[in-house]
Length: 120
Image (tube, rainbow, N blue to C red; front, side, top):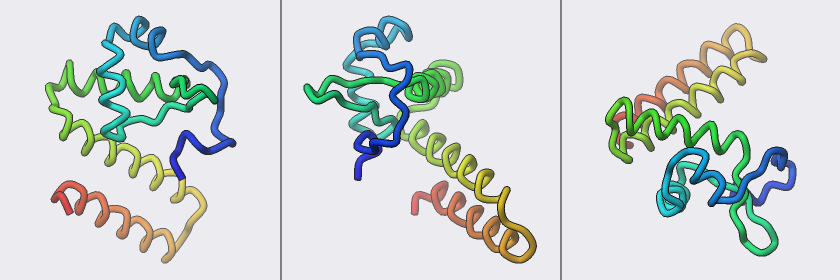
């Protein structure tokens, strides 16, 4: 299932592509390219208009920072975003675990992040 197909996904604060492009001073084609690369997944209307949430805008601001300020290319941005998302997942899951389960989970998560960095 595609993330934008999730009916539970919040639809508050949605913006169409032209508004987001103007807000972030980005070309709409750039936004479409980021979507094709899997860097974000805006929701869609029945007429297939892209609807960008506040979360999507936050992701775009992060991408813009990684490219503009840190000089990463899009492959580097993909890697950084994957690692960032994995860290957030690990942090959330670690809150409910303890003892050996926590230790094993953290070790597995670190191994997965290292594998991402190696391109595996």
